[in-house]
Amino acid sequence: MPRSLTDRVVRRLFEGARGVLLLAGLVVLAACNGGPSKMLAAPVTGYNHTSAAINRFTVNDAGGPNLGPHQGGGKQSCCGSVPRTWRPGLTAVVVWEKDPDPYSYGEWTERPYSDAWAKRMEEHKRHYSHHKAVVDIPKYDIAGTLKVHFLPCDQVRVSADNVKPGDPRYPYNYPINMPEPNVCPE
Image (cartoon, rainbow, N blue to C red; front, side, top):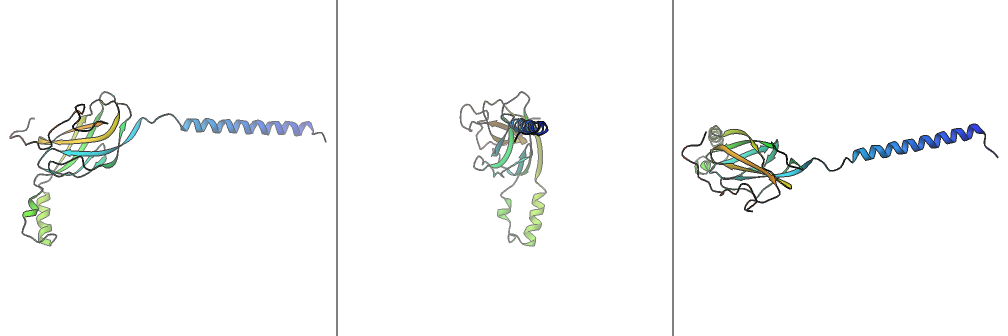
């Protein structure tokens, strides 16, 4: 039975609308895939070149592992972020807490975790110092782990490359055991 002109027009409009909706959906999906992201997730690790303990630290608000004196590189925390491509002026903000005498409580006569020990620990914590530094991140070709180096005189360095300490291409090959100078530079 032949269809009426009205039926054919309605059918054509419906098919056209369906095609437009399908095309719009494809455009939306294509917009969601805007290519590679500009930022990459990066593990955070630290290297403590001092005789103090680094109780906690963050780099660009991403937490890193605690570090004993003259230790580092053995632990990572997830995750910070780094630009996929390095750019001039790239910096990191490092915030940290330092215990200048991390082994002193081992010599205390108070029973561990007793009220007297807790009181002494509160006194010990009053000697912790808190620091913040904004440092440049050196040029990298391939983004990698955020590596934070804690140096004498409350100095820090940060790299975000895919090169490990000890490699000649790594920017901060400091000895892990660095003595504190008698006078720190201003």
